[in-house]
Length: 212
Image (cartoon, rainbow, N blue to C red; front, side, top):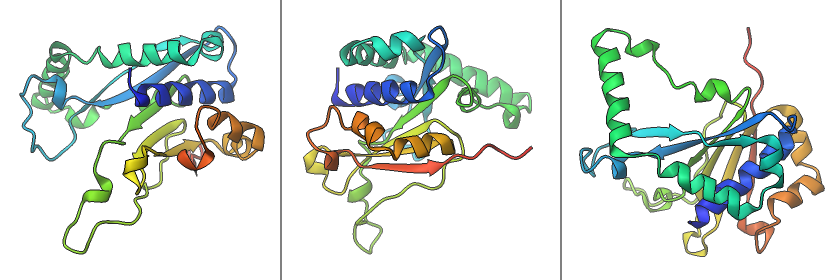
């Protein structure tokens, strides 16, 4: 189990509590994963483009609220292990078939749609070298995300001081959720397992409902 498994589990638990859905509701976690390492070397190391898939572990809302952090982190780790080479090849075969049939622009993941109902999507970019990239004018002093419009979406990124192991967490939430998380009691929940609040900076984005 990794530190990022624990952080992902912690975010899932806190945001699940914030949603406050009925005990019997199914809570799902959308785990976006780069499948290069799962594809048996089929994707070149220097491939420049998205090569992602996702898994969606789930449990009841009551279980998510009550289970210890370590147990939820174990569920996260087990879901990562579902990204096998066989599964990745089946997904790619489906996409190739849809493209050959001329339907590629009609295919999309349902995880973004499920975020309006039962899923909290987490995309962990903490190992990407944002602060080591230099296009000729020096490395960046800060990296920020573009606006996110899908609610209950979380991005985890490194911070400029990468040696301290800190993480920069960006979340897109409905306005009611943003207002709640500005309260000290909710902010304290996020930093419950951190040595200090400075090690876990949060950025909130308003994910307003789409217009009809």
